[in-house]
Image (cartoon, rainbow, N blue to C red; front, side):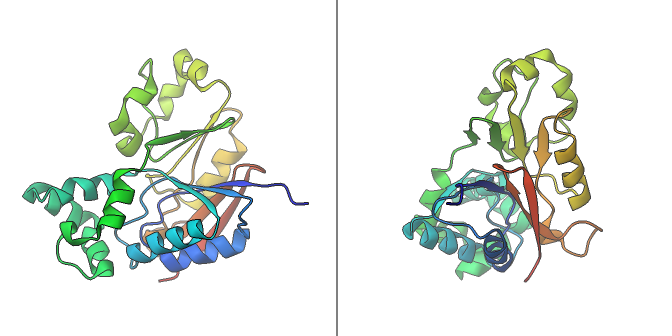
Length: 234
């Protein structure tokens, strides 16, 4: 009998076809658990389709858990209809998200989707892993108090030098996305987790063709510490 697995995927960004192909590649079952680390929406062609796939699979018994990323937060800010927040969301891919829903304003996106995003947590703590969208402010005595950093932080790895960070992690590995890196760098991070306990699994699926090594959606098998990549399909 197959052992149930845990997977992490981040930064789908509306790439619904690629997301579906990746799920087929890893052969996800209802015994497995899938953690999606935020940024389901924006920039890509079918944000609505990403949500609908997740909702349908959850109804079928798949164990899918989602985090809030900075793009979900940008959307929630835009729903207030403040001009600056709406503009910020639109220039960061919100226009494509509205197009996938067939609406002209963020407030016109149906309540089902808005409520789903509003209820997303910021972090998952597992036995061996800490799952977060962007990273953690390890300079804080209590990193979980800095919610903004969980969605937005970049260039934070040097903070691992602080003994407080090591004590707080307690031998767990941080898995995150948010900052696109080539797939070779993700693979190198996995090989070096004994030295630096963090893996960035954002391989910039939505940025296909812009940089060598970007343009794939990554799934990290947390159970077996194995990486899977699926190239962008629009």
